Length: 200
Image (cartoon, rainbow, N blue to C red; front, side, top):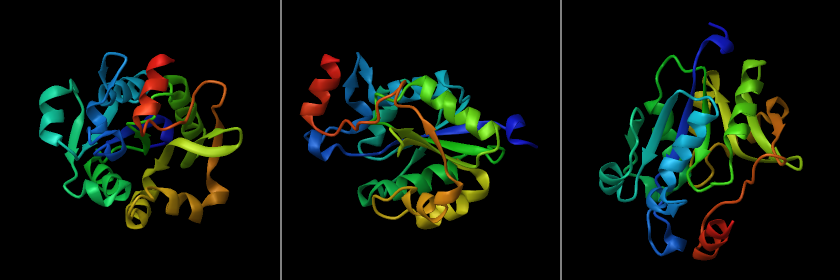
């Protein structure tokens, strides 16, 4: 099957413990009246991803009981405290085998929009097997990883590096998709960040 005929699965990394947010699990931080994980899932679905996997870690039983995530594949990452790399590995292992790519979305980037997700999917359907949203020409999130790179991505995902090793090793193959006009890449890491996002 061509890329255009196979689904792109969204992979929402939502395992973080929110250490700089006072120990509140990031998945359950409230944003615009609902948990961040629900917001992230809504964004990737609105952007065109029909298959969604969510990686849970900190307080995962509470997230399962509290967040409304119908139709999502939920993958537990017991090693979430080791960093984002362990969550990427857990998420890639949970994807449906027919996925042509994974659209990796961080739960703490509420400024990423459905339009940014859609642009990455368009790049993939045009032939890109590695793509990343760019902001003023600088690589950011989300990123898209074609299925042929899943094993390499998992092997290089250690600590907090996530897909950085993979994207660095194949820098000349990464399609940078400019999204500064439609999205904001900033992380929500601290109470000050949360207040700024809430005010916006």
